[in-house]
Structure formats: structure tokens, C-alpha cells
Length: 96
Length: 196
Image 1 (spheres, rainbow over the protein chains, first blue to last red):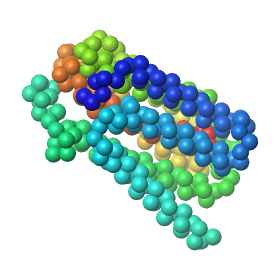
Image 2: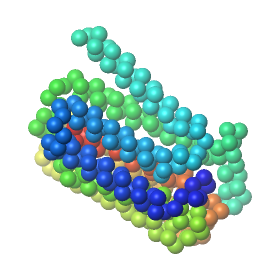
Image 3: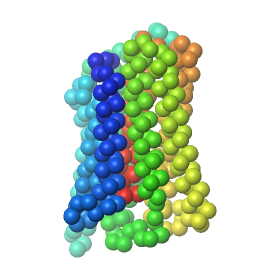
């Protein structure tokens, strides 16, 4: 019970951040708020999603309070995914 | 879910992490691989089609946003259910747990509405590659949400019967790990399918 000292208010604050970041992502993709090219908007929106995912994993899934190497268990498949994407992209670039 | 079983289930492994928690995390790692494969395939298909998804691939952003908000709320109620159970506040924990299952059901209800609207317009998984990806990704995700709802309802019933208490509250943490994972998957599916 690693998170016994976290107050419910903290969880509510994380929820506020999650909802806010979600609305920011929707606003950025739907309205021309930032004078950026579309690929940069796409990267920004996906970056916001990554921040939300980290917030959920860090606080709601209690990774912040768990053993550090448990983060490795969660991150290892993501590293494999990154490797697969890089290999895929490299094969696309070679064809070009 | 006897106390004897609860005690044995919470024993720490050689890693210093309770065996059941480590088991759930390893299961989630395999689930990450599963969805990573699906999402990776979607990304490569999308990159190979510059005009993707085209005007015929329109999804309602307000409905998708509302559903994302529902799932974010359910993550909060799930973690609050665990926090309240840890503090021995049975009634509040049961309330949050039931609310989590209801919010998950609402998510599935909205998803069913979206599906029926697509079917009504003659859009099916075989329509084109975009819709194949859409129904595959959201369909598998919806099945995972359904699994989470059933699990949470099971623990809600156990709590109502007094079999889930502060002494074995970590069962809720394990259930919560799965529920939050399902939330994280949607956090990425929403922008990939609806926004960008």
C-alpha cells in the first residue's frame, strides 16, 4: 500500500490536469490557435497524450511509489515499439 | 477471498514487489505489446496514405471528447475507491467502485451509439482500410473496457458482502492497474482516430 499517504485531493488535482490537457489537445487540433504547420500540431497533440499517460501511470497506477525497476517492466514494451517504428521508418526511407 | 488467501496473495516476491502485483504488471506489459502492434500497424497504414482518412472517414470530435472525459473521470473514481478502501471507508469505496463501473458502461453506451450510427450510414469494417482500423482498435479496446467493468462489479459485490475490506484492499489496486491501463490506451486512440 505504497500510496497510503496520498490524499484524495491529489487524485482530484491529477484529474483536473488530465481534463485540461485533453481540452487543450482538442483545441489545438480543431482550431488554428498555434501558427504551426500541421505535422507540428500532430506532434504537440501526441505529446500532450504522452504527458496524460505518464500522469495516469505515475499517480493513479502508483509507479511514483513503487520500485524503480517496475517502471522498466512498463517501459520495456514501449522501447520495443520504438525500435519497431524506427525499423519500419528506416525501411520506408530506404525505399524512397 | 478468505483472509488466509489474502495474506498469501500479498507476499512479496524476491523482487520486493508483491507477486500478484508483479503478475498484473507483466500481464499489462503483454497488453501494451498487443495494442502497440495494432496502433503501429495503424500508423504505418496511415503514413502510406497521404490523404488519410479523407472526408468519408469523419468521426464526431464532441462525442469522442465526451467519451474521453467519461473515461478520465472513471480513472479518478477507481483510484478514489482504492484510497477510501485503504482508509477503511467501506461505503465510500463501494460508491466509487460502482461509479467506476457505471462510467465504464456509459463509455460503452456512447461507443455503441457511434457504431450504430456508422452501421446506419452503411459504414462497416470492410468499407475501407480506415474503418477496418477504426473498428479493430476501438472494438478491442471496448472488449477490454467490458472486462474491466465485470472485474469492478465483481469486487463491488465482494465489498458489499464484506469480503473486500481494508485487509485485502490491494485487490482494488490490481483491478485499478488494469482499469488505468485501459484509460491510457484510449488516451492515445482518441487523438489518433478523432483529432489528427
